Length: 144
Length: 144
Length: 144
Image: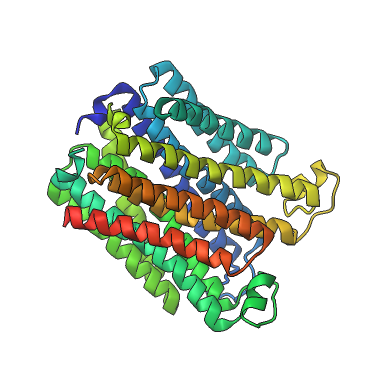
């Protein structure tokens, strides 16, 4: 079990953990916004918080969920391809560039989504996708 | 390829497989509930089952999907962080505690979500998040 | 770091990368369809594209998102169980059968979902689930 001692794999472990915690924070934040807006689609939640039920979530909750879903959709390819990329023997500088670019662009994407600014949100999305694509090319070149 | 022979990694393999099958079961269950409720948002499904199309899913299908999405949102951080935690050289007792706590809390979360009981659903969500957070701290301490 | 040199693990790396890129393509495609249909639930997107805001996405965007979500829900169990399966010492022929069956069924699932054909979509979903289940049995037999 000495994979974590490898400098590049250790870097992956660090960034993959932060990307995963980012998802966990967005999940809990959705619950926080829902409780503050007091609009609940689950009747059992509405009765717990003495609120009335609703057909759809409050717009602020919907926005938080969209930000969370977008983070999740991108985290899955990143976690898988980033792992394989870390195993493909990249340079430490290359790994740092890909991993921190992805992490930074996605943290900014969530913040920008929650405050609702364009075209910055789309730019952050594109940067994250580019990082995934770059690592994918590296993996495919190694295994093909 | 002897990672699976390591006791802690073998435990991860067992629990990660069960967590993944849990997701697959929820996916198929959504299709089952949709077919039983005969409300279809895809016109091609409605015509296959000789039902009328709809703008939104039946409330029971929406609930199943929310349970599934919540399971998926949490499974991704668990699968990634749990993997890195298993590689970080934890004690077998610690790994058993984290892995089975996560698995148990999430299976109960799904059941409780489907029957609609609070505050037990939120409690199970919090226990699952705590298990992820505890393992994340362990990984970060190893790589930092 | 010689996992990628193992023939079965190299196969996993190839297919896991393609499955992950499939998700990335569906994510970008959703944005493409949204821009073409000019229906935006985020007011900041509507004003960027000089369109009016909307309560819900255009039906074509909703369909693309359902296809994407279905791909994501299945990719997570596949990526986790496929990884553990690759570590469990399967034959190369068995791994090829499982991995390419999964990849093929899911690529077809997305295409069929976007054009709206039944019962082919459900058939592709079932084939993908069967591949995941078969690999899960193999992993469980190895670790139990």
